Amino acid sequence: MCDYSLHGVASRPAKVGDRLVTTDFRNTLTRGFSAVGEPEVAVCLMPGTELAFEAEVERYHIWLQMLFFRRDKWKIPHKVGRFRQINVDNPATHHDAIEFPDGRLVLVTRLRPGQHATVLQLPARQHAATEAKSEPRPASPASAR
Figure (cartoon, one colour):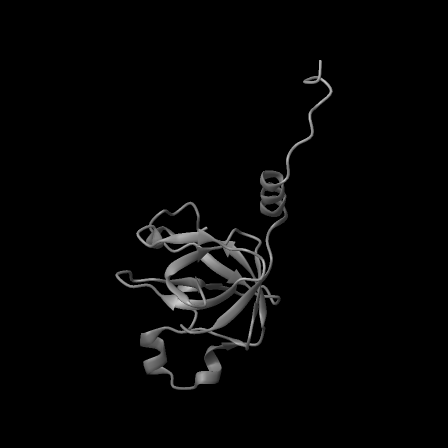
């Protein structure tokens, strides 16, 4: 899903193997994922999508970065994570987050821009729905009568 704040940005669903980059989108106050080479198009992830980052993930918040200069404090010692949505009952807040193996949740808007990741796996229900659309369904015995 794309966060509510990205509704004014062109978007497309994620595919397995997509190379993504954390991006600040023009005319928004938020950050999300775009495909490498497509900085104007948000790539929407479904909850459960698994990502592999090229390096340890770094958080970013302009005011906190200015107050605390130790950059290593903002690193997350993981290169894989699973996309989730949090606080879905509150429509006026960011929902898109990455859950890391240690249970830590980081909002996508708090990831440092310019980090690269690859979509490893889509959630099972989305993968099944995609296959169902691409494969013709066999006729049921009841419809053959």
